[in-house]
Image (cartoon, rainbow, N blue to C red; front, side, top):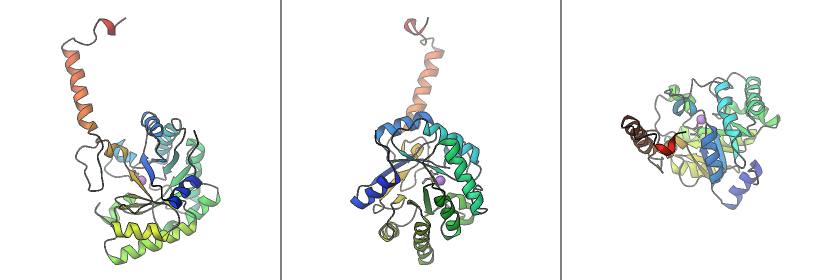
Length: 265
Ligand code: KIV
Ligand code: NA
């Protein structure tokens, strides 16, 4: 199989082929997603929510991200694997950001990193890119800043914030980002950003004009019961299916139906 590269991802934008991206946090799921042909797998710090049960992405550590990333990398033959720099591992200064990115690349075998923010993180992006590490940006609703926003509602509806987002996109592209995620922004703004930068813009609640789409895999599989933002298309109801399978197992054990003659030594 031919590995996806930043060059191939860039070409997809040029020829108008939409880029597919899902999150992955573990070996089993990453094996299936890579086999299905996803272009990019994101080891998102959403692992803090969906894997560890935290309310926000803030608590997850660099070591924990590396553990998830190494598990995903062991599964992947084709996809380009991007790993989130977690909260606190890059905001201090660009040297710290570079050291964190290097740890992720060395200790997990990932292919690139992602970090949140615009003008504030330009110096860090430049420094990481200079070291030869592909960087993906992330603008709009950046969950590591949730306590600044105070809400998970759609961002950049007001002109001031929209203008800042557009200049941030240009700034992080100039700093060397190979791609930019935009989260929960108006579709018109997603279109403007995708048209104003040459690198692929990948949306999550960013509208249909983005160059690609990303979802949290646990959400699109229906594992996260009760989480149904407008941008989420739910492809399965795995919560119910796993719940019913567990119920059936309990029933089979209690009724002594399991194990039967063929299921013993
Ligand atoms: O952590 C994550 O899952 C993400 C995606 C939502 C883009 O950053
Ligand atoms: Na993230």
